[in-house]
Image (cartoon, rainbow, N blue to C red):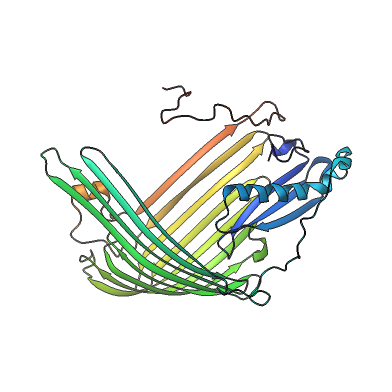
Length: 385
């Protein structure tokens, strides 16, 4: 941005700027991203604002993404530059070609009928004299997204093996497999309401499940119109799920298979403003046959610009866990516990982080100088402690 948009003075902190550029994004139906670029006037320009949008293709290279963002920011800044002495040095051009409407099933002829498919396979391995590890995965997805209807399907398979040689020369192998598939259909009802249904089938060594089938209708209400989703969302999602489980080993409840119905409420707040970003989710779920089988999860992330150069970040997740139907009665060996062979009994989970940073100095020194930018594995020009 600093190199390709040289007709403005870039500053280090938003508190020093005349125009604050806020970029947000959401995944689009073609597998790419819809970027929303908001230009907000500050200081003597307070009260003026503008918003531009553009959509990327799913396989756009990083260079193409940069160029599209640069072009959008250039266009957005013109209205302000036009009122400065630099206006006389601006030139305007047009690439030509017909102007297109936003694509919909009604105004385009699409042989794929708006379906987008992705296939990916991944593998990685590492090892040393007494330990080896191999991970492979296969992922398939098919999505069709329009303003009225969203269809999302996926399938995946994962295989992981850890081979450890003990001191006495014997070997311990840890094999963890999983596969599954899911489908989601969502119908847009109004600017605030939507309804859908999710179906899923899973096999998992980690969760002691030979097969777990789920069929769950749901309804969602968004306090803000969905058109504002890139900047702010406050959603309430309620779902009732019918679940059929078949276990690899008898559970702590003495079950080899069972049919259970549960309900889940998800409340999510996501807002991105000039002062920072806040993302918070609360989830509550329980089984109908025993209200004592439930879980509660609160997670969040906050990134606040407290003042000039002062930035505070905090986030984490805490859960109350009382619904581990899948736990095996026989338990796990010490070695299986160490390598994470299966899920362990717990009544809670948590993780968190926090950080504070303060930057001060020149607000105009935004020079880009990439020389000596490479460092080796050990950090050639980094002080070692």
